[in-house]
Length: 418
Figure 1: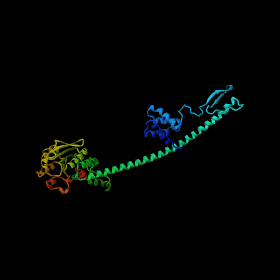
Figure 2: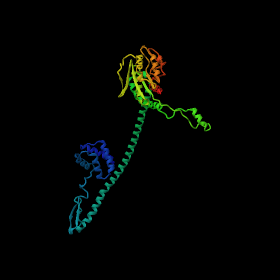
Figure 3: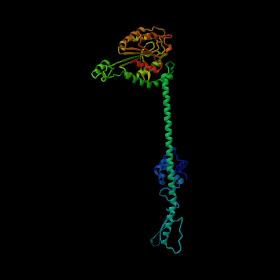
Figure 4: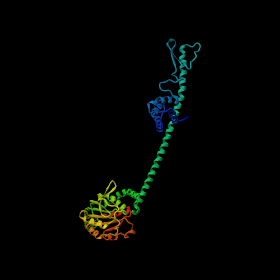
């Protein structure tokens, strides 16, 4: 015996042959609708009609197809061979005579009209019971089969959903691991070997690096309620308690208001590292009282970011030859505007001056006006001081010269500004 699921699939094919458009999703809705409505004939017909018929113009075709496929009469319509096909009449003495025209009962000799109903009625009741009993048994068996199929399909769909969820979780974990490995590799890749594609990947790696740098910088520069331990005052206070160091005394911490000035070389040799440094500092502006970003090639221009693009005012000639001595002269003329005792000057560049005057004396005077001068060099160590590099002359005038060959070293170097 076929299950309800198979019968519904064949009935859908029967409807499609009659021109009724039915999708796979609607077929599944029909199965769910029957499971929810029950397995009575009227309930099945209405559930199928509600889920499969989209246009009222298709309802007559659906009703005819339902009657032809399942062999069930429409509600209120008699079927041949059932108890509805009876003829009522009046016998002698006003008694009701009920006869079936399809199966007439021959009258026995000597029997009166009053005995005919008594003989015909048990036989009709027995026929109705015989006809109804197989339908009920079949409906009960189909109902049990459909419940089993529904439970089995529910379990299978649950297993499939859990399997797909595990596959999705494994795929997401694999993608996250690959992304993490790619960002880690981008943090360690030297700036000297960057291409435009590597620069875009480095900008993606710069986002978590920027958050980490902001937290670390804020932790170093934020105002603390207490300074370092004052040992002299602590020992004096312990005398009152027999030498037990129970009451710690701290030095008062003075507030630190730091102004940051960035001077970055954006010539072709170091433009990637300088741009990334400016973006990194832009994400930590709140850690400083004031941040001034300057870029240079042969002269100084103010820098800012608009929609993730570096904007210079005034615009610089990117094909000009580097002249850091001239840049130091411009910075010295603007010292009253930019420099002060609370100013940290961070220079990003390779110190290559195209054999022009280095003007290290100006850098010495600038360092005297500032809190400190830190130089970050993105070149490889074996290239420092070779060719037209004047980094050795500049190194003597700054507090510290640090390598910044990749994003990791750039972050470590910028943390020294505190």
